[in-house]
Length: 266
Image (tube, rainbow, N blue to C red; front, side, top):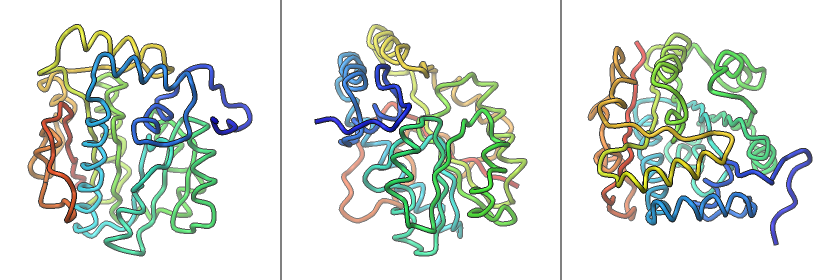
């Protein structure tokens, strides 16, 4: 039986956050979300494995940031809480880590607050990455995050919903507002290696959600980071990004079509 949706949440249309929850084996999704996922799986039968690869990258990049001395994080577009959230990964390295989760989806925020209630080292607010000033100046953000110190920002599968110019603006705004030594990570789906018809089917599935997907070539994804410095190994496919940060027992990466990068602030 599906969970009772939070008051005021429309479950007749699929939500990217709830689709992501389904990919990760969560229970906070509904028939519209599962139908959209089924359409995605028709186009990309290995989508579940790809999402799992993204989760492996999340764990590596959080550990990397912790080892760089970062003890506070902002996870934008975090989606519904699921296994191994950002604060859980980070607190295995440093128990004093603080994490702010942000999502535009009301259901994600409502469920997130319920799950994280009573945890003073975390907060969950509703906000759009297109309105970063509101996120950075939100009272809960200011209460949890010390902007005089470095911050780790996580944007998993977020920038491929916007134009290249918008993505560059997001990185620029973050860089201007974060202390030197901060790190900004992102992932982005890539067109290269993909069957044209499969890509069209994938885009059609996401077109039925409030947030249509944009797929790009590796060359175009690289333009997002024009003018920004990046941490080694630069912008690469996620299975090539810092496997030295993997925890013991994690599976070997498969060949993915998702790119990842970490931007440095100065």
